[in-house]
Amino acid sequence: MYSERAVGAIEVLAKAFDDITGSGQVELSEEHGEVFIWVFGWWAWISRSSKLVVLAHRADLGHESIPSMRSIMEHSLVMQWVVDTGADAIATLSALDDERRRKLFDEVVAAGWSVSPEFNRPEPVTDPRRRKIENFGELCVSYNARSLYVPYRMLSAHVHPTAKGAAAYMSENRLADHPVQAVVGSDLAVTAVCVIQAALTINSLLSSDLLSAAITAAQERLGAAIDRPTLKPA
Image 1 (tube, rainbow, N blue to C red):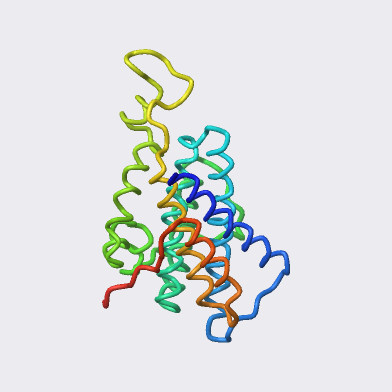
Image 2 (cartoon, rainbow, N blue to C red):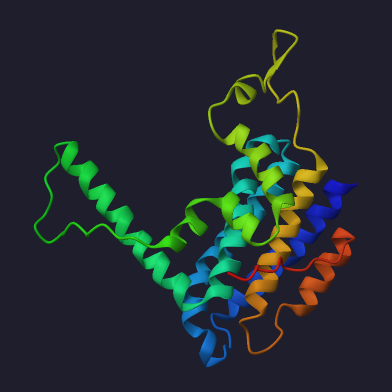
């Protein structure tokens, strides 16, 4: 029952994403323009990844879609933090991009690859807000959302090479062609909640309530009223 409700909610918002992007543009208030440019791609990732989760569920590959579900959880809260924090978050994202390019540059040099002179090594940067993006647990605490971090950690055991993941296809020392413990309905339900929260975040940036009807329909399919978590005061 949980599974079908969650799938129904996800499908409603996946269609809403298709409808909006099919038009090629949306109306934004001027104050939200720059933030929207930063988070739209993440919403697209969430929406399209949610389609992948549904396809996997219907193909009896729900367990193998765990990386996508975990990614949806992370992206939905980070994009909300960027919307809530605005220019400061954008500055942090830019600084982290420089930091990643610096590390990649160093790894390329260490690997003995030649580097074109046009590519410069960014200088190391310091930004105390970067942990909000690099440490999902800390971000969850900032939003009083430990209830989201618990399933995130549980799913992480199957994303990384762990003992739990190694035993996923073994039953009483017998090989199995399917996971012994399949994805449960609650995992899909949490995914649906995050997809709804991402839609609420995007809808807050639009000058018209393009997503409101779809969000309401998705909540009805899921059978629960969903709100965005609230960022605690700094």
